[in-house]
Length: 342
Image (tube, rainbow, N blue to C red; front, top):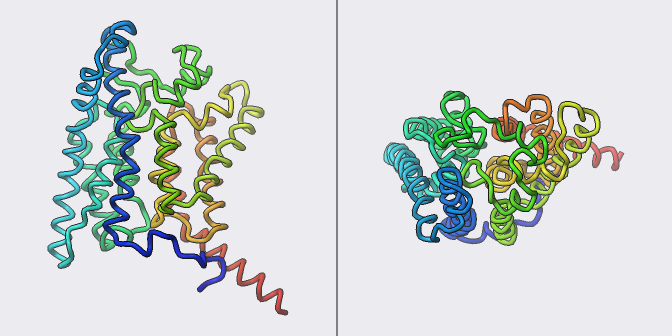
């Protein structure tokens, strides 16, 4: 085994692929529940008033959330399933049910009013160029859900409200959420606890850091993701946030403790960046990749706040650099050992 690579196999490698998929799908459940409830609640909050939203029954809130989420999920799943069936038949391999997990991730990274044509395009591109041509799940160096969302953002930059606010709801057209949050929620009277538990508007699955933390703990317990990589993201984010808050105070007035609970950082770090097939394989490489990603996210937020979140393009770049990071780490380990024996 090459120097620097893990010598202890993860627990999940000893079990079936089916079990891995079940663990992943179970990890999505807390985030999915939070997305359904918050999406329905935010609908009533914006369409009517805070009093009526509070008085709305649980059934009404859940139903409204499902009305937004389920159509997007069905379109994403059908788009992924069609391409997976084509590649499975051409290559004579079984149908990969992992597309269900991918469809859930893409759905949770969409705004409530996402267009179906955008979902079909993004999923089709990802299933062909980030999944199918590499041979299926676990054989690509990029996360298909990450590629799908990145392509939608790049191809349709003005047609989807990736600022996290619903353009089809009155009173929020054209507002960039980081321009609001630059004053630590003052313009919208949002507290840190509201942002942490998910009582805010945003991409449907990214609002509740609390629910995402439950999913992260579940995945770490089953060794589906690396805690080093996840901690690296948080450390890089906080360090760069403190630096930017000190050096760019006049143009970037966001306290460091707001950074982890804003945007899609928490969701993307847990479900996209920590994908074993799309991240570094060495322990040192995981620290480097995580810290680099977290730092770049804050840096882009500070230098270009009108762009918004900056999470997806940064994670796409860092995922492509993961093999290079591993190569450099292994090279340094070999050189150190050779020097030690000289």
